[in-house]
Amino acid sequence: MQRWRGLEATPGDLGRTVVTVGMYDGVHRGHQKLIGAAVARARAMRRPCLLLTFDPHPAEVVRPGSHPAILTSMDRKAELVADLGVDAMCVLPFTPDFMRLAPETFTHTVLVEHLHAAEVVVGENFTYGHRAAGTVDSLRAEGRRFGFAVEGIPLAGVNKDDDDSADDEVTISSTYIRACVAAGDMVSAASALGRPHRVDGVVVRGHRRGRELGYPTANVETPPFTAIPADGVYAGHLVTRDGDGASRDRYPAAISVGTNPTFQGSRRTVEAYVLDYEGDLYGEHVGVEFAARLRPMAAFADVDALLEAMAKDVADTRSALGL
Image 1: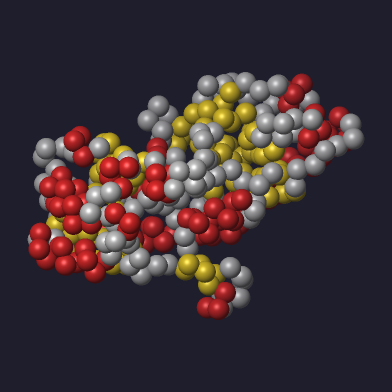
Image 2: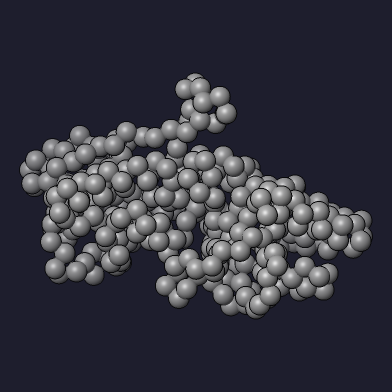
């Protein structure tokens, strides 16, 4: 998949495209439906499918200090949309000047002049331009003027309970998934995402207490605004990544999120004990996937009690992952 940042870096030989526009944070099941529709249209028209997204999150520019927790890093987003069949991804810097563009200026400058849209596929609630004044209806009108078609895709839903009652269905959104993650509800998050929630980061040196206790952990330093689950112990996986950010190997892991209260810690960390693994992960770029929450974070009276809990965490992780 081609990938570039800024309109000025758009390849000169791009040709006409089918464009889908959005933050696509999480690339959840609703996003997958929308992207799938764009890819299908692109294949039918024999044109490349181009995904346009933004960095930073528009909320931080519109309302400074309101940056939401981020479900997927830009590298992870690129990997996920490429797997869905997207041919190109343009990351547009969301600046105060860009925020002030009138809807028709956004349409002409971005979609027509630079990205050469033959068709635009967006969610039915899509808005754009200064003060979000542009809607799917206005985009259709501008499409008739500039020569591109517009398709608005209905929002997808997910059932919260096992009875699959329509009354229990909620609209899948990044906001909903962030709330699930913040509550430690990884099962509901995975249901909406279509896969386990994952945080990416770099393995750095910590206090090495886990190694001293016989449970060496990978201390994963995550970027600012990462959507980290509620404090607790989780069953999941650690995924190694190559230099381009693509996923490589996947290992089962018991994951701790919190401040290590037994040792009066104050800094919140993500630490993964990789089961049956021998090797050095320091400096590696990895992803940590959260499958299920095993227990809340707790302070233990002494090291022996902590070791007993850690042994149970590992056994519970094996059980949760079916190992």
